[in-house]
Length: 289
Figure 1 (cartoon, rainbow, N blue to C red):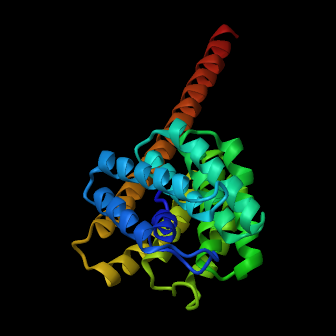
Figure 2 (spheres, helix red, strand yellow):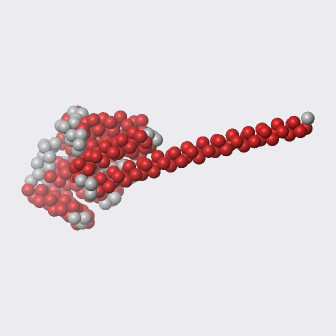
Figure 3 (cartoon, rainbow, N blue to C red):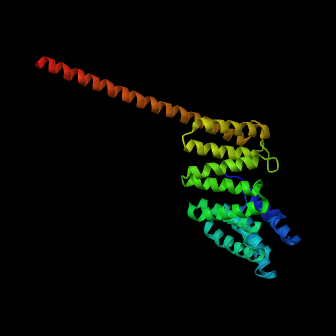
């Protein structure tokens, strides 16, 4: 299942946003740009060291509850998360969360961002029970601040639905995907032909596969394919992934039909055997009489 908008959280911490009231100074932006450059080039260790240096500089020059320290903590935590070093990431996320809750309040968007990141980490670790309340809280905060038709709300709807799929709670996941799809299709958010809509379509299609609703899944996969072809052209990896999804689904459909035919053949063979047995039994009774 394809994750959606994960890079959004990185973007918010890397370039700054109007979501929070704090502003970055030039030195922080320069250091952070270096971290982002290292990460984009695949130099994870260099990025981590640069992020550590940024955090150390902030801790030496700022008060313990300064929001900039929370940003530095979150950025370092994100890098650890991407490297799969969850034990190092978790306390950093939690410390950043404590700072932002104290400075901005428990219902601020910056708090919701950290909640979402920490919840995603818990999913990677298979700790679904810990992730669920964090996603729900982040969703409630974003919906309160921005209303239902917003990229943040769409993201958390999709993420919470994915969590429910991991838990096998398909009935809970479906309405969340549908709500995310409706909001994402709104021109105020992405628009119905946006690649993000294709991601949600694909995720909902995979839910239908889990439920054995192959016809509905195929329609969604084909719609996602059409969107990605329109946006990226036929040679894009997302288009190739869409084609693979459709081909895999077709194989599942064929296998299901084969299984059904085997079952029918088995039942038919059993009936024939019963008939033969009854005929032999009747014949033996006639001979005995």
